[in-house]
Amino acid sequence: MISHGKDIKIFTGNANPALAEEICKLMGLKLGESEVKTFADGEVSVSLYESVRGSDVFLINSTCKPVNDSLMELLIMIDACKRASAGRVTAVIPYFGYARQDRKAKSRDPISAKLVANMLTAAGADRVLTMDLHASQIQGFFDIPVDNLLGNPIFVDYYAKKFGERAEEMVVVSPDVGSVARARTFAQKLHMSLAIVDKRRQKANQCEVMNVIGDVAGKECILFDDMVDTGGSLCNAAKAIVEVGGASGVYACASHGVLSGPAIERINNSVIKEAAFLSTIPAIDTALSDKIKYLSVAPMFAEAIERIYQEISIAKLFS
Image (cartoon, rainbow, N blue to C red; front, top):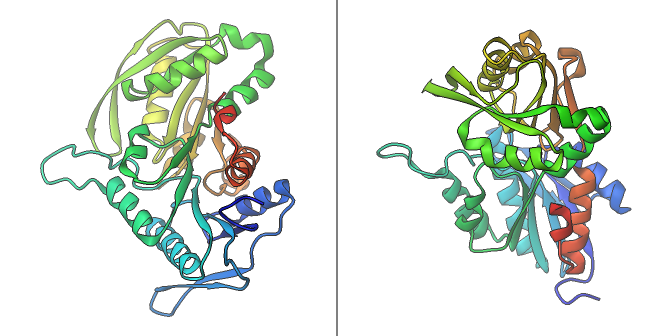
């Protein structure tokens, strides 16, 4: 038996219970019995209905909409487990909210990602397991181990099967300069060429596309990003690829489909043929869009949790 706990327990909050259920099913485990609800005044209430004393506990909760409620659920679940003498508590956060506030962009800005890291550590988390942080350096905001899984292999596998040999004739497009590194890695694995959409952002959640760097004329393209919030950047980039670059078709993929406000309507009305997201955030109603597709991250998280529990390296999951 491993030294840090006698067994493994997995619990979930209300953010993405379907993902937690799928992970447990793949691992052959039963989801821990718990109740996470709110009092009449909105305060979060957590009740664990089974012992966690000495156990290796994994708490699964994406900090997605409603972000603050999801975050408080996770913090209070961590506290409940620590006070119940859990052997080790791992916060499994498929989508890490507040990750875009990772630096001071202007005077008197907060660095909210660091604050969230401090809160998770103060609550008693012993380690964090997440996926595709908006900025990888957020791992350094923590004084506890952080495993940042990559959704890249899931998309590589999906598009390799979808397009086959045709994939090598396609172009991966980064929707902005900041996403070039992850788009380049994705392109190399599929042996595709790379292009960049150069844009100038006027204000938050709005952008003006300026130019397409690279040859996309007459080719099918895959727009690759880490998240889609309101969909403005993605849809404007897709429009530029077709109208300015002369591409014959555009597919899009992103790890986190936040899909706030007009995002779904924008994607439906855009030139994008298909937008693929990972299941780090609960899927939208399929009736709202026939362009949006979800790929499951449960197998990757299930293997990562199993490896963390068994004290085996998770390096295999990054390739």
